[in-house]
Length: 232
Ligand code: A5P
Image (cartoon, rainbow, N blue to C red; front, side, top):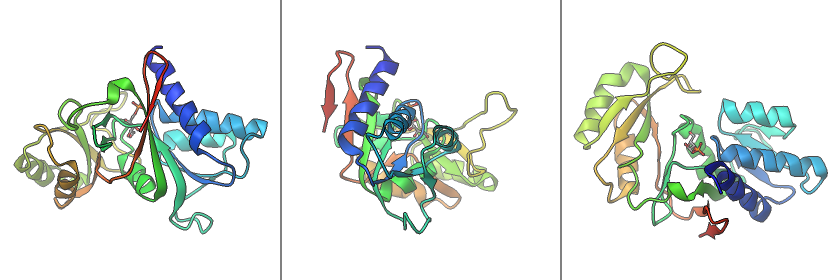
């Protein structure tokens, strides 16, 4: 299997196993999560799923979900009332304790709100995303208030990071997120306690959110290139 086939296999497995009719579902962002969006849309279309109400994590996902006719609400909508049955999303790295780095697509802030508001968070990845320590090979994205660029950079350096402002492609200057913020991609020395680092980063004034997902209890669905699925 090539990488895109693995992404699709993980997404189809997760939708098949975890998405049930009547659920309130968070839809992630990125090249893996979009396969889950397509699978849910196809099941709504042919009747295998009914009465799904979804909350999207980005413009990318909202545009596709709207185009495909998946009913959307916001997390604050009274039918959702701040709690989802399930959220499905990709990740940039997954460690041995099922903790994650996310935000390669820049949507980490709303992704974290949705993931942490879900009774169950299912992470869909291909085998290239499994690592021993997060934050070392793939940088941890940190979403920041534009006016706080310099002090936040200094604060992150004090934590041992090497922050780099994410630059846009097809636009001059930096990436501006869906929330009007900037992103600092931070390479850390191997992170021994991700949950603690997640909190330390967020305590720097001017940080909106960071891409370490250090909450316990995430479910990982990982597709391997031999066609098998690791579900843990
Ligand atoms: C989006 O901001 C990210 O958190 C993605 O979920 C993550 O980068 C994984 O993306 P891919 O599935 O495209 O690798």
